Amino acid sequence: MKLFSLEADMFKLDGGAMFGVVPKTIWQRTNPSDSQNRIDISATSLLIELGNRLILIDTGMGDKQSEKFYQHFDRVGGSNLVKAIRAHGFSEQEVTDVFLTHLHFDHVGGATIRDQKNRILPTFINATYWSNQEHWDWAVVHPNPREKASFLEENLIPLKKSSQLRFIDQTSENYTKCSQLPFSIIFANGHTEKQMLPMIEYQGKTLVFMADLLPTIGHIPLPYIMSYDTRPLITLAEKEVFLKKAAQNNWYLFLQHDARNQIITVKETEKGVRLDKTFIFNDLFNH
Image (cartoon, rainbow, N blue to C red; front, side, top):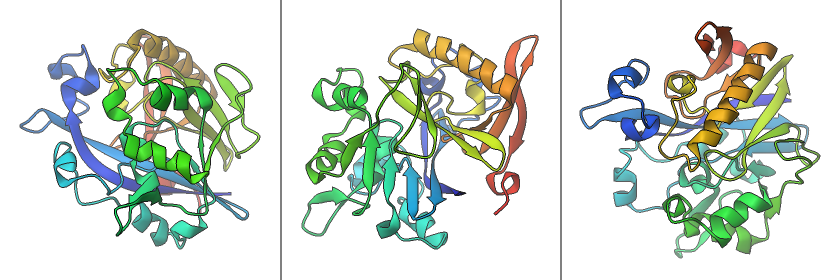
């Protein structure tokens, strides 16, 4: 097995929305904002090479939306996902699986493209796309009004129509040792229903792809929760359980949305679980 970190997008989001009830005077210590109160956000994907399989975890925003849409997020350039895949010597046609942690637009937008005939088609034509039934129903069948703006039909319906979409076999409520893919999955429900966090055993380390359970190092303290979360008290409880296990087991946490810190470990302190060490992906793993 080999892992590759892929920077799909760099953009900005409102710092207040990213930290909820936490005052700016506190959160800006770890996540400095610009003149419009926005903080830097990345959308980083992972690529797993395993035998004849090439598995992509999340896809960023993609490029098929309007210029006005992307201006809301002050995105730097276009989507870099396919470029990043090619930079590692692969092509988009070689991707066999696309694992979607959840279906918000900044995680699933790059899963499809708009062609010259204005059709929206899967970006990875030979890949199986993985979600789970409960989250799919939450996003597509009965989306709630508060979250609906993040579940864009143009990102989701073409996947269903393509017949490339499949659902993970969930063997327990919060944890699944996945039979279809080479990693285990932690389920988290505070941010959105049945978000999936891959837990990958790699080079003697346990690497957890954090998605939106822990967006940045600034979100490590328990009350530091995004306003985007649909059930913040559930997020708080999930973070508490997860971070204790991460500290006890020396898990390496891949921060998908942190524009400055790629991988971290955490430790127990008198104030609770806090940051231990930070790592650069290519320095931590030998290739």
